Length: 279
Image: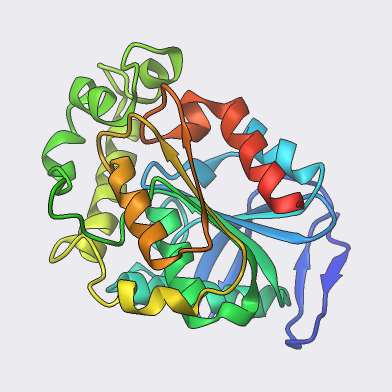
Protein backbone atom coordinates (compact mmCIF):
# COMPACT_ATOMS: atom_id res chain seq x y z
CA UNK A 1 0.00 0.00 0.00
CA UNK A 2 2.72 2.49 0.91
CA UNK A 3 4.50 2.83 -2.42
CA UNK A 4 4.47 6.46 -3.53
CA UNK A 5 7.70 8.25 -2.64
CA UNK A 6 7.78 12.01 -3.09
CA UNK A 7 11.20 13.49 -3.76
CA UNK A 8 11.21 16.89 -5.47
CA UNK A 9 13.49 19.90 -5.53
CA UNK A 10 13.02 20.75 -1.85
CA UNK A 11 14.67 17.44 -0.97
CA UNK A 12 12.05 16.08 1.43
CA UNK A 13 10.92 12.47 1.38
CA UNK A 14 7.50 11.41 2.62
CA UNK A 15 6.02 7.99 2.02
CA UNK A 16 2.33 8.15 1.07
CA UNK A 17 -0.06 5.40 0.12
CA UNK A 18 -1.41 5.06 -3.41
CA UNK A 19 -4.99 4.61 -2.22
CA UNK A 20 -6.92 7.86 -2.33
CA UNK A 21 -8.69 9.56 0.51
CA UNK A 22 -7.48 7.64 3.53
CA UNK A 23 -6.16 9.58 6.48
CA UNK A 24 -2.38 9.50 6.86
CA UNK A 25 -0.15 11.36 9.29
CA UNK A 26 2.87 13.45 8.27
CA UNK A 27 5.32 14.81 10.83
CA UNK A 28 5.82 18.55 10.32
CA UNK A 29 8.57 19.74 12.65
CA UNK A 30 7.11 17.66 15.47
CA UNK A 31 3.49 18.46 14.64
CA UNK A 32 1.61 15.30 13.54
CA UNK A 33 -0.54 16.47 10.65
CA UNK A 34 -3.43 14.42 9.28
CA UNK A 35 -3.53 14.43 5.48
CA UNK A 36 -5.78 12.93 2.82
CA UNK A 37 -4.78 12.85 -0.84
CA UNK A 38 -5.66 11.39 -4.21
CA UNK A 39 -5.28 12.00 -7.93
CA UNK A 40 -2.48 12.87 -10.31
CA UNK A 41 -1.30 16.00 -12.03
CA UNK A 42 -0.72 19.50 -10.70
CA UNK A 43 -0.60 19.59 -6.87
CA UNK A 44 -3.85 21.12 -5.55
CA UNK A 45 -4.05 21.94 -1.82
CA UNK A 46 -7.41 22.55 -0.14
CA UNK A 47 -7.48 24.27 3.27
CA UNK A 48 -10.63 23.58 5.24
CA UNK A 49 -13.04 25.87 7.07
CA UNK A 50 -13.75 25.96 10.81
CA UNK A 51 -16.14 23.03 10.29
CA UNK A 52 -13.15 20.75 9.76
CA UNK A 53 -14.51 19.13 6.58
CA UNK A 54 -11.12 17.46 6.10
CA UNK A 55 -12.21 14.73 8.55
CA UNK A 56 -13.49 12.63 5.64
CA UNK A 57 -12.89 12.31 1.91
CA UNK A 58 -15.87 14.20 0.50
CA UNK A 59 -17.33 13.88 -3.03
CA UNK A 60 -16.04 17.27 -4.15
CA UNK A 61 -12.48 16.25 -3.28
CA UNK A 62 -12.88 13.21 -5.51
CA UNK A 63 -14.19 15.39 -8.35
CA UNK A 64 -11.10 17.58 -8.13
CA UNK A 65 -8.86 14.48 -7.92
CA UNK A 66 -9.96 13.49 -11.43
CA UNK A 67 -7.91 16.42 -12.74
CA UNK A 68 -5.40 17.33 -10.02
CA UNK A 69 -3.24 15.73 -7.33
CA UNK A 70 -5.39 16.80 -4.39
CA UNK A 71 -4.04 17.25 -0.85
CA UNK A 72 -6.44 17.94 2.04
CA UNK A 73 -4.55 18.53 5.31
CA UNK A 74 -6.16 19.14 8.69
CA UNK A 75 -5.11 22.32 10.52
CA UNK A 76 -3.09 22.01 13.75
CA UNK A 77 -5.46 21.43 16.67
CA UNK A 78 -8.37 20.33 14.49
CA UNK A 79 -9.41 16.69 14.45
CA UNK A 80 -6.40 14.48 15.14
CA UNK A 81 -3.77 16.93 13.91
CA UNK A 82 -1.38 17.94 16.69
CA UNK A 83 0.78 20.97 17.27
CA UNK A 84 -1.91 23.18 18.77
CA UNK A 85 0.49 24.25 21.54
CA UNK A 86 2.86 25.66 18.89
CA UNK A 87 0.23 27.73 17.08
CA UNK A 88 -0.75 31.19 18.29
CA UNK A 89 -1.71 33.02 15.09
CA UNK A 90 -2.78 32.68 11.47
CA UNK A 91 0.83 33.46 10.56
CA UNK A 92 1.95 30.41 12.56
CA UNK A 93 -0.48 28.28 10.55
CA UNK A 94 0.90 29.70 7.30
CA UNK A 95 4.44 28.73 8.33
CA UNK A 96 3.17 25.30 9.35
CA UNK A 97 1.79 24.73 5.87
CA UNK A 98 4.88 25.84 3.99
CA UNK A 99 6.80 23.32 6.11
CA UNK A 100 4.21 20.69 5.17
CA UNK A 101 4.72 21.51 1.48
CA UNK A 102 8.46 21.04 2.00
CA UNK A 103 7.87 17.73 3.78
CA UNK A 104 5.76 16.53 0.84
CA UNK A 105 8.30 17.77 -1.68
CA UNK A 106 5.76 20.17 -3.21
CA UNK A 107 7.24 23.11 -5.07
CA UNK A 108 4.52 25.16 -6.78
CA UNK A 109 0.88 24.36 -5.95
CA UNK A 110 -2.64 25.41 -6.72
CA UNK A 111 -3.84 26.69 -3.36
CA UNK A 112 -7.31 27.46 -2.08
CA UNK A 113 -9.69 27.27 0.81
CA UNK A 114 -13.05 28.25 2.24
CA UNK A 115 -13.57 30.66 5.16
CA UNK A 116 -10.69 30.21 7.63
CA UNK A 117 -8.89 28.11 5.01
CA UNK A 118 -9.16 30.91 2.46
CA UNK A 119 -7.63 33.40 4.86
CA UNK A 120 -4.74 31.01 5.58
CA UNK A 121 -4.24 30.54 1.83
CA UNK A 122 -3.96 34.31 1.34
CA UNK A 123 -1.39 34.56 4.14
CA UNK A 124 0.68 31.81 2.53
CA UNK A 125 0.51 33.44 -0.90
CA UNK A 126 1.72 36.86 0.30
CA UNK A 127 4.73 35.31 2.05
CA UNK A 128 5.74 32.73 -0.54
CA UNK A 129 4.26 33.92 -3.86
CA UNK A 130 6.71 31.72 -5.79
CA UNK A 131 5.09 28.62 -4.27
CA UNK A 132 1.54 29.40 -5.48
CA UNK A 133 0.69 28.71 -9.12
CA UNK A 134 -2.94 29.74 -8.75
CA UNK A 135 -4.91 30.97 -5.74
CA UNK A 136 -8.61 30.79 -5.00
CA UNK A 137 -10.29 32.16 -1.89
CA UNK A 138 -13.92 31.52 -0.95
CA UNK A 139 -15.93 33.43 1.67
CA UNK A 140 -12.80 34.26 3.64
CA UNK A 141 -12.20 36.73 6.46
CA UNK A 142 -8.74 38.26 6.93
CA UNK A 143 -9.67 41.84 6.04
CA UNK A 144 -12.04 44.21 7.82
CA UNK A 145 -14.99 46.16 6.39
CA UNK A 146 -16.22 48.89 8.73
CA UNK A 147 -19.66 49.01 7.13
CA UNK A 148 -20.26 45.29 7.74
CA UNK A 149 -18.41 44.11 10.86
CA UNK A 150 -18.28 40.37 11.36
CA UNK A 151 -20.89 38.92 13.76
CA UNK A 152 -19.94 37.21 17.00
CA UNK A 153 -19.35 33.71 15.70
CA UNK A 154 -18.56 32.24 19.12
CA UNK A 155 -21.88 33.32 20.60
CA UNK A 156 -23.87 31.88 17.71
CA UNK A 157 -22.10 28.65 16.78
CA UNK A 158 -23.20 26.56 19.77
CA UNK A 159 -26.88 27.05 18.84
CA UNK A 160 -27.74 24.77 15.87
CA UNK A 161 -30.63 26.92 14.61
CA UNK A 162 -28.63 30.16 14.79
CA UNK A 163 -25.70 28.42 13.11
CA UNK A 164 -27.89 27.30 10.22
CA UNK A 165 -29.30 30.80 9.83
CA UNK A 166 -25.84 32.36 9.91
CA UNK A 167 -24.05 29.97 7.57
CA UNK A 168 -26.69 28.94 5.04
CA UNK A 169 -28.85 30.96 2.67
CA UNK A 170 -31.53 28.30 3.21
CA UNK A 171 -31.24 27.22 6.85
CA UNK A 172 -33.74 24.42 6.23
CA UNK A 173 -31.85 22.78 3.37
CA UNK A 174 -30.69 19.19 3.74
CA UNK A 175 -26.99 19.96 4.34
CA UNK A 176 -27.78 22.63 6.95
CA UNK A 177 -29.95 20.18 8.87
CA UNK A 178 -27.35 17.42 8.52
CA UNK A 179 -24.37 19.47 9.72
CA UNK A 180 -26.14 21.37 12.51
CA UNK A 181 -28.53 18.90 14.11
CA UNK A 182 -30.69 20.13 16.97
CA UNK A 183 -29.80 17.11 19.11
CA UNK A 184 -26.13 16.43 18.46
CA UNK A 185 -24.36 13.48 20.04
CA UNK A 186 -21.47 13.93 22.47
CA UNK A 187 -18.85 13.47 19.76
CA UNK A 188 -20.34 16.23 17.60
CA UNK A 189 -20.49 18.61 20.55
CA UNK A 190 -16.88 17.88 21.53
CA UNK A 191 -15.69 18.33 17.94
CA UNK A 192 -17.48 21.68 17.65
CA UNK A 193 -16.02 22.82 20.98
CA UNK A 194 -12.53 21.76 19.91
CA UNK A 195 -12.80 23.67 16.62
CA UNK A 196 -14.02 26.82 18.34
CA UNK A 197 -11.22 26.54 20.91
CA UNK A 198 -8.62 26.49 18.14
CA UNK A 199 -10.36 29.33 16.30
CA UNK A 200 -10.46 31.42 19.47
CA UNK A 201 -6.72 31.05 19.89
CA UNK A 202 -6.22 32.31 16.34
CA UNK A 203 -8.71 35.19 16.11
CA UNK A 204 -9.98 36.09 19.60
CA UNK A 205 -8.03 39.34 19.81
CA UNK A 206 -8.72 40.35 16.23
CA UNK A 207 -10.63 38.43 13.53
CA UNK A 208 -8.55 39.95 10.72
CA UNK A 209 -4.95 40.80 9.83
CA UNK A 210 -4.34 44.58 9.74
CA UNK A 211 -1.13 44.03 7.73
CA UNK A 212 -2.74 41.87 5.06
CA UNK A 213 -4.03 44.73 2.83
CA UNK A 214 -0.53 46.17 2.42
CA UNK A 215 0.86 42.71 1.56
CA UNK A 216 -1.71 41.46 -0.92
CA UNK A 217 0.11 43.18 -3.81
CA UNK A 218 2.78 40.49 -3.45
CA UNK A 219 0.36 37.94 -4.89
CA UNK A 220 1.15 37.86 -8.60
CA UNK A 221 -0.52 34.59 -9.59
CA UNK A 222 -4.02 34.33 -11.12
CA UNK A 223 -6.55 34.62 -8.28
CA UNK A 224 -10.24 33.77 -7.97
CA UNK A 225 -12.38 35.35 -5.24
CA UNK A 226 -15.50 33.22 -4.89
CA UNK A 227 -18.36 34.26 -2.60
CA UNK A 228 -21.81 33.10 -1.65
CA UNK A 229 -24.04 36.01 -2.67
CA UNK A 230 -26.05 35.62 0.55
CA UNK A 231 -23.15 35.02 2.97
CA UNK A 232 -24.24 36.42 6.36
CA UNK A 233 -21.02 35.60 8.21
CA UNK A 234 -18.46 37.09 5.81
CA UNK A 235 -20.54 39.18 3.38
CA UNK A 236 -19.58 39.68 -0.29
CA UNK A 237 -18.27 43.13 0.64
CA UNK A 238 -15.23 41.28 2.02
CA UNK A 239 -14.67 39.72 -1.38
CA UNK A 240 -14.88 43.21 -2.87
CA UNK A 241 -12.31 44.35 -0.30
CA UNK A 242 -9.93 41.60 -1.41
CA UNK A 243 -10.46 42.66 -5.03
CA UNK A 244 -9.58 46.25 -4.10
CA UNK A 245 -6.10 45.08 -3.16
CA UNK A 246 -5.95 42.41 -5.87
CA UNK A 247 -7.15 44.41 -8.91
CA UNK A 248 -6.35 41.59 -11.34
CA UNK A 249 -8.29 38.98 -9.39
CA UNK A 250 -11.56 37.58 -10.69
CA UNK A 251 -14.49 38.10 -8.30
CA UNK A 252 -17.54 35.86 -8.69
CA UNK A 253 -20.66 35.28 -6.64
CA UNK A 254 -22.74 32.14 -6.34
CA UNK A 255 -26.43 33.02 -6.27
CA UNK A 256 -28.68 31.76 -3.46
CA UNK A 257 -25.67 30.61 -1.48
CA UNK A 258 -24.43 31.36 2.03
CA UNK A 259 -21.06 30.99 3.73
CA UNK A 260 -20.43 27.32 2.86
CA UNK A 261 -20.66 26.94 -0.93
CA UNK A 262 -19.08 23.46 -0.89
CA UNK A 263 -22.17 22.23 0.98
CA UNK A 264 -25.01 24.49 -0.12
CA UNK A 265 -24.11 24.84 -3.81
CA UNK A 266 -21.58 22.05 -4.28
CA UNK A 267 -21.88 21.55 -8.05
CA UNK A 268 -21.52 25.22 -8.98
CA UNK A 269 -18.74 25.74 -6.43
CA UNK A 270 -16.71 22.78 -7.69
CA UNK A 271 -17.19 23.70 -11.33
CA UNK A 272 -16.12 27.31 -10.82
CA UNK A 273 -12.96 26.21 -9.02
CA UNK A 274 -12.15 23.61 -11.71
CA UNK A 275 -12.77 26.07 -14.53
CA UNK A 276 -10.43 28.61 -12.95
CA UNK A 277 -7.69 26.15 -12.03
CA UNK A 278 -7.47 24.46 -15.41
CA UNK A 279 -7.49 27.69 -17.50
